[in-house]
Length: 209
Image 1 (tube, one colour):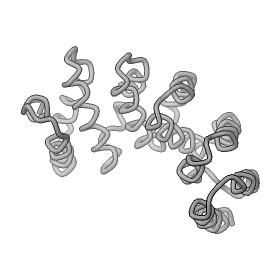
Image 2 (cartoon, helix red, strand yellow):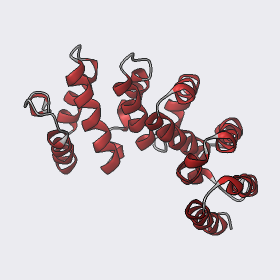
Image 3 (cartoon, one colour):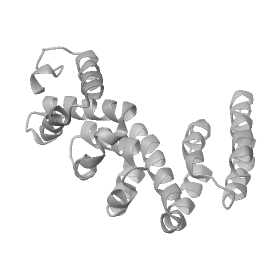
């Protein structure tokens, strides 16, 4: 399977990696997926980068096929290669609701990367934290306040996108606090952003009944 990666085919686009992910999903090829997961540790950065791309593309389609590699994705958060860091967070976002206890054991590292990471890392970090918060009341008591604080202080242009990701963990018990924050943030948004928030508020109102 490694030979089918974009870098091995001397391609500069991601099409071969996406095609490989689709093939592995279609066949539910556990052996092939394991080979790709092993490639995450390859000293060749191009191979490792292509492997994480294949894995998180699988995760967007059939997350259960990569859930057993949660610890491998968590290890990527320690990488000096930013491509692997944000790729690892995308993969974790895909599977956080399937293996929340595994990810929560490394929550300090997840939060460290979340607080200092790229836009992609932050976006997917919000999804990870929201899914963990939804999975367990104990996790919610720890993580929900952090999510609220982030939505309170993030740049206005990021409010809609991040609030939509955070909405995964909104329930009857925490909806009011979330909606109150959105009400305040609307004062700093333009008309299109406000309309987007209103749609989210309507969704939350139904979700929290």
